[in-house]
Length: 454
Image (cartoon, rainbow, N blue to C red; front, side, top):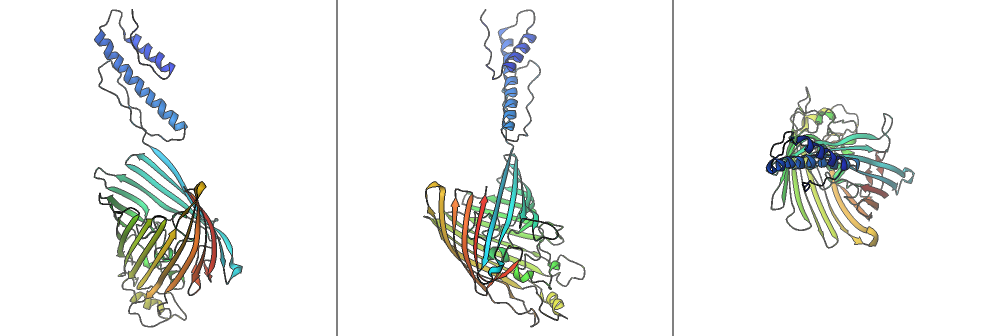
């Protein structure tokens, strides 16, 4: 008698097991062809499920992470339609970026130094095609301890889900959608050894808050983002420190997710348009009360209104970018008066207005072997304390002059993930905040750095 057809299985063990199961089901008397066909269909389903399990085990050994359960096959000899194994959708990705910089002030060469500015490790785990988790951990200045200037921090930690409508919802600690640099701050994403001053002193990159967000895209090239988060805490302002003037007002009072006072929320909305090839036009608004209703605090009525406009155009090797950011803090008079009363010397008052802007141009020269040389120039103007409202003249109550900065340099990209940079920064009033342990270096500077991102 001709041997009945049997599906070819990938493993001899599976073939033997399937054949044994078939013989166990065959009764002593003859069976009909229809019954035998039904039982063969069941065996095919079992084989497919077993093969899918083997594939997942082999993928896990190769470095993939799988969490998809095996679909249980039928256990009784009944007719089945078709068993389709679930795809292995789970995936974990490790990312990282870092940068090291050499700084040499031209008029204070004894302050020349090398700093491991930051090292970052990120993990993104995709539970399925719609759900993911994003985490990012950062170390600054190489060493973190109670006696060092380094810092260890959680830069991002959130979960995100895409819904049927195309909307994406997120919850956790995430970067605020403001400016050109805040959400794209890797050393390979900007020109210059250091981030632009506007994007560190006015926008406190990396500015992050804990909360809820919702985002989406449209067919016309418009993307939008909105949410409610924690906000800065004005009661943290230290009038005896120059941090609010040097580092910037928001850098002095933002919470970063560390026991962030959440009495008053912060609302944000952002939109961007990419309707033409190489063109990005975007803006954002952030607002909320920042007094946080602290008992007896004279700044409880203060409100932050912060907005930015930015654009970037890349065409035929050219890369043009511009950004304008402006912030106001209302009802600062009572708080600043309390700081000024009884002060024997200068104090750092809360500004009623602060702003920054820059324009930048670069050109890409591409060479063989994956090398790209990009010379650039950037002009910035900013002021961390442009006005103090109606506050009368008092120690620290005089608006400071605008800071104007020229940066000229070049970046050499090696492939897609490594960049070597050099630049010269010239400050009109010869003061530059920096990411080095001394914290504040007087004088213009020559800078050289190397960074990576993957």
